[in-house]
Length: 128
Image (cartoon, rainbow, N blue to C red):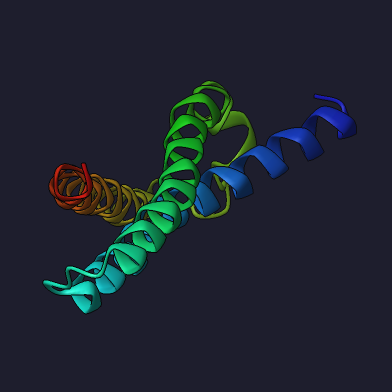
């Protein structure tokens, strides 16, 4: 593996981890904003919320896209690039925990965005 390709893989793996965190954190941030929104009927506030949600949803979609797309080379080159020979099989429990957390983060992020999108549909109906 060339150094250039190694650096590209390394950056892909970093961005893959960041995308996972962004999916969850964007959902958490929007959930908190949605909760602060409460039951307001102020149309300007509701429109602002929808504008904010649109931008954050784009961030979540790009994150989900990168999780899927960036995961492909990560899986293909895992043993060659990320597997620590020094840790050997002792790293397997840590990897299980790491991946369980990632699945939890992705699932929680998806759940939050589904919940947020229900509220968005409700607000859009009110504004029509």
